[in-house]
Image (tube, rainbow, N blue to C red; front, side):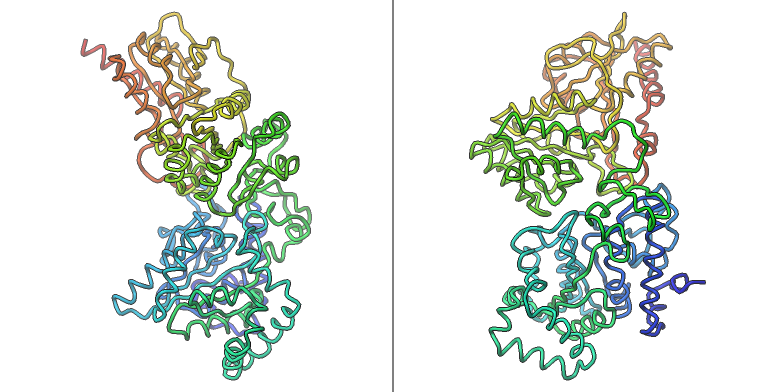
Length: 635
């Protein structure tokens, strides 16, 4: 049995001698690389927090002490140390989640995979403990770029206001999120690495504070309280202390003894305290260190043994033999072409330049792209400013993350009739990242925004065409959405009516199948199966699903039944919009909507989830046939 296999709960760590902890850290990394390589997952972030996580669980008593993770993708080591060492189905149906999960363990407090929220959670938990008279500690681990989010600073403003409320903030400072962390805060933190006195300070803090804490603590406090020049040399410390937070650091995040000492000192304070740990993303894995670390942030399945080959795709892209391009790459290529034609087109990303496909645009036009950090709200408002200044911004973002900026889309972009294009990657059912990452709400949430138009392309040709159509709109926000998968075969139209494409027209029309975006092939196959049953099905792709095209209403009037098939929640989705349009036009035709129910979906492959939801040709045909049979019986 390895040392790691002997760790079944955090208390097992406390029984280990300090001299054995380095060996344990090595075993954890030896486990992580091949385990994540088999299934895919977040590799770089977890390799960087091995020692930090060991120290956290040796100092604190989880689950009584509440350890919160932001972002949650850096919790794999935490899972290993809390009894979850079967990674054979990581992010696979029936296996471990890629994020903290309350269903998995009492040690998981929040299922946090949207960044910058943990400090708000911690503030609330600490307040609850104070009201209830509990002395269990609250520890919030924030890093991987999450401090660039505005919500984190809203929480800090509240946390610092309570000088007598214990709360420990651990900043995992690895200089990166998906890519190098940017902005003023990152610059402040970087001074601790670039100041001439940094190496001496780190050595001093390790030698004095960790080996002689009784002497070291008053010496540390006297230096920082009496010598303003020393404080000014380390600006981040001054910044946090000016907010009212005790500051400990910087600490070598890969020195377990140093981290433990810092955490024990923090636990002794009777108020909010920040522990600043410096870590190295991808530590211990040669390919991640020799190449750009963000390529190893999220990986698909990799060649084994990965330590030898280190073959890894760009972040978020699965390893696969040559085949159809991804939707993301089609968008990225088209943006480069558009950039050459239109100097007014600019781009924004929220810490995901490569995952959303903007890296080539940034290489070609570096002065026309901005990474704003994990700050979707700011990105939307900044886009409104760019549009008002005469440019046409494209904000490329995961569909699930645009939920965070709804108010800004509504009140800053739409109210001011700004020509901003939101490109939503990972729309619809995403799959392996779980409940928080499915982009299944966008068409419902954004559908209530006055004037906003939503395009759902069915293939690569339509993505290129509809992106250009969106960029021609300068008086309203536009949205272009697509899923996380490879682009399928082209789907030709037999007719264009208004702005909609008719993909299949039978001799005798009985059913109108409204195919939303990538559900077009599913609807075409359903039409074939219906034909085998003697039912004629017209398949129409609205292309722009909001607002509903008059052509869809006209087509509906000539059919016995209308069925809308979408990879969005049914409530408030395209089906709801089509139904409202039919009622407004006094078209009395029965309508059935195939989509996602109002529930959070488990992690699984996209195809598995679609099958479970009944979004397959056979399921669609079965329900439509039953509807038609009931209609005939009533007549």
